[in-house]
Length: 163
Image (cartoon, rainbow, N blue to C red; front, side, top):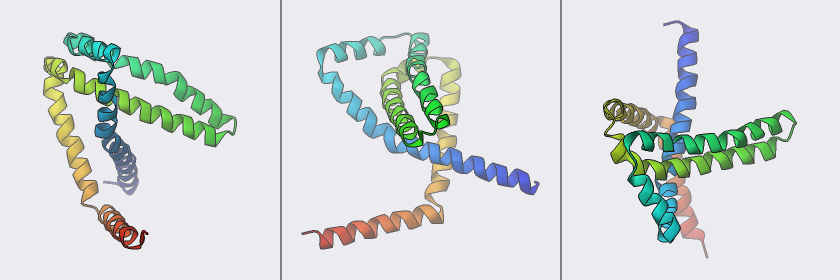
């Protein structure tokens, strides 16, 4: 394999791993946060409607957050172009967190219906295994282990010195 190809593959891996780490970091906590909204009667009724969707309906539900957040992301890019990088970055990160929260909860609600789609039932376990392998590689890296060690030592130091 050529040197350029190895470098490009490594860059892609690092960018993709960073995206996966962000998604994994936020997926469960944000889904739990959104699940709390189900205590509200109207929200609970909406969630019941979503869980009752057909497989195709469940698939279409995923288009709503994408279509809703697309203009927000375009606005962030516009702000970057106008030199307002801080506001653009805050807007882009906010859209990413909001999108992750909504998609995480929607996936929890629609996964049973989606698994009735033959192609989804075939590809989702493969995607999950591939994603888990990438995350395992990241978690086994020296950088990750060093960061975890630093985090653990910092926590211990904080507990020891906290008044």
